[in-house]
Length: 397
Ligand code: GLA
Image (cartoon, rainbow, N blue to C red; front, side):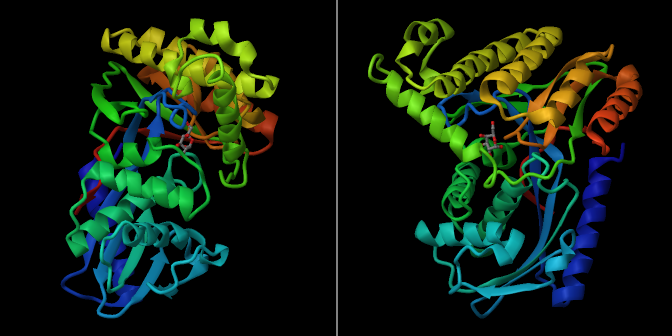
């Protein structure tokens, strides 16, 4: 695997070159990076006041940017070149599908202004990523955190990284129409090399937990099923959880589903009228408790048990939350069959996207070959596999 510092340097050179080609060469062009993330366990708990356990990756999105004297905003992506240069202005901050990916940085600019930060002049921005787009590794959160980090640096705003995560989430919720929780933006903004973040989404209290996988690695498998969470059942899952919570609040004094233990859920679950909402809430409650246990066993050095909990998490989200589909289920089920696969589950919002697996070093080649072949046979097209490393949050390069 290539050394992260060498990749950073290569990507920096490439994005600067891209900037020069599109917008010219200037001494004050700055380069930034923000990471994607993978969630190890704790899925669809972040908008239910539960715990999550994500980590930032060493892959992500780079930007070369420079402030302008006028109010123009110009964007170019070296990955999504089809859109060409998108030119807009601070006076046109309205979401519009024809603006494609630029709705994310525009949303962040809009949100800074909404929160009282003065942005009077625009900027030029070229981005280049080494993270697959729309694959469930939070390319959109990376782009939001990247834009926030850049705005803070260019305009000198007083906001910390948790603030950048909250602005990213606000922008995704209210500008881009995706009702996500805080997990992805938090993981990108607060990432720490070789650590996952045990985050209580009800209080935003967090703890870094070292991920020590002696003789094993994190392997991501991408279904390559394209998905867009705004079009998927994500927002409806969230509504179903909220309905379940309202029903429960008639019989028990709780603020979120994350307040319940499994025993309490079993005691009060009949208050939830709709059986679908009951299943969704069951997942949210059990997954939150499972995440707490997973972090406890991991801290005690029991990676095997952590792996079993990953499998239980997948089964719960597949059967009770129903956001996996045949693609993610196939990847996970095939992974569980491989000797040397310690654990495997879907990661992220679902409806396509990726699985994350912990695989022993000596089993990785077999894992990729066998899971890959079984997936292709059943689904009809290939999955992609990446061995990933846990990296730091955003930075200026
Ligand atoms: C998406 C959202 C997150 C979280 C996950 C599911 O990634 O952006 O906020 O809800 O789905 O855990």
